[in-house]
Length: 196
Image: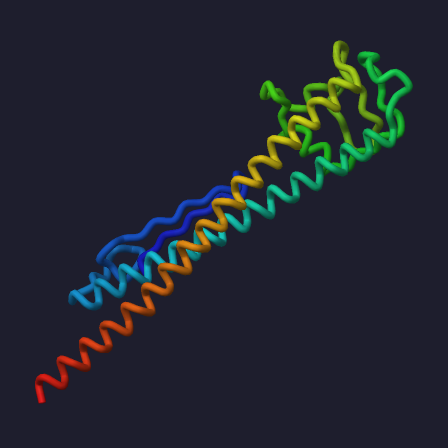
């Protein structure tokens, strides 16, 4: 197979390429013969679409994990609302964040692109009640968290649409490969019969 799959686990992104006319991803084994080339091209495209589906599955899983983390943080915040949610610079007593949730707050962004961890001073740590920085209130934090959740939910919906589209393309290409194999077999059989 001449497909090349690269995946960045940190960024949860990937790329799938193929080398037309070769039977290997290093580009050393050239495919000879029209029928062989047609079949190799079709198989590579079907395999590439299968790899793309796998990448989208990993992206959707990562996005689902992010959404679950956001929901858990929101639940903790809502269960421990301060008496005055508009008061700025307060400590959110009763809120106990895990290390994964603290890490997440560094990657989640509000509608303006600022990290949600920037709403705290000092930076939140696991097991310690977080303190909002001066100028930030519980209401501000909730607005930022809801914005982050909406962004991730919208991205997840778009990825699901892309996923379904890619599955359809993969299935069509797989069916095309099967039809091509049948056609090539029929042509070979007809050629053999003509030679008799």
